[in-house]
Length: 506
Image 1 (spheres, rainbow, N blue to C red):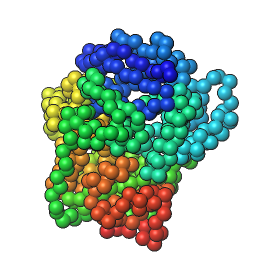
Image 2 (cartoon, rainbow, N blue to C red):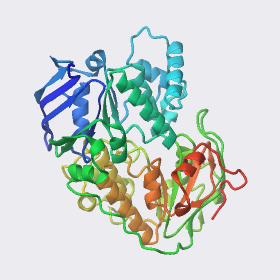
Image 3 (cartoon, rainbow, N blue to C red):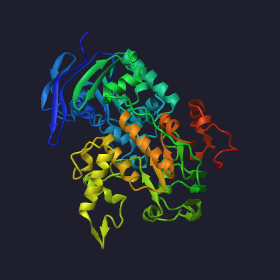
Image 4 (spheres, helix red, strand yellow):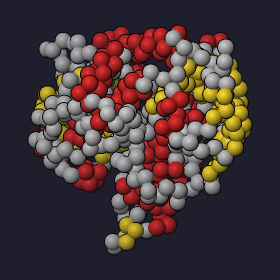
């Protein structure tokens, strides 16, 4: 049998870093092959080389036994290679159908394509509305668009980067079944995930990359999560230490929050009641697109249509306050979209400090204190182990996981009274995820009130004191994490809970 893909001595250097250093990779037909490595290890660069989005400095690529030069993604697609990027390549002003049509022949009929999109999305459990404009979608919904676009091409090699972060546990199992079926039909799959249990359950082989170099190839089915972690980061992630404490006074109170749709494809919020007290972490689970985006906009001040007293922040009616006023009351916020909202791509890490730290420490009599923001950026980089060329490196130069560490670090170091975090460890390796979670727990132990919105159930069970689920714009009752189960939360994510109890305060 001819090998599907072979990489020999692939190298790629940038001015500040060697992303890939003589990498070897072999993928067989019908094989589900994981590529495992910590953030900044060079995985994304390697995948972009395979897909033709990045040109290697050295090395050879063999496709079905023949050497090829993949000059661009169009050539990759002609060969039968499809990829779902970690950072999406979608145009905000176009619809889902129009975005997918961009990679197809010019004579493709949009109405027929829309029907194919609906059928494929339904087959794989990925709910999509083909006529929605991308700017109305959440990050999770955008990922669904990318996955469906890749599956429509019926590829010989499918590259998936963190594909399950938008799915319920039941939908993850359905997707795994689909991927196993694709593999059985001969499609090769390159699978990038930081969920070690997923890799062990799904993949036939695993190539581990550390600091741009191969460090090993293994059968993950014969490894433990701990041994895979040691191969990837050189150690096992530390256990999270949590101090037992009684929660304090309510710091964030959401009372009967109702918001009509801001656009035709938005989710209406219905009677949202939520309380977060000082010294506790409240987790909010749910499939992307069920109202998380609208709730985040209301809490952060991006959407100020709510009644003033429907959002109480440290005892102050905040429903109509702009974001700056909320920050002055001690509010901190980490959005789910890293580039464009969490950070300005073209600005340096130091200048990005100004997005949330506009105080006398950074601004004096109308002038930015340049040295102060550089020092703050350097402190975040050092404390959170961010792999970057320094405080003056542009935000876009960081890998997704390292940028996430920087954004979370920027908010943590403000020492807020209330912190709302969306998807804190999406696409972050196990070591960095453990560090971020430990920092959030330390904030909780210091008396901060934290609301964590995540589609990673393991993460919420790991750090949250109480859990809610949001489904179709409604909030479930609160449940202590110790009393919850994955099966129950999965059921609630489908909207199946007692209506009489839904959204009650604790």
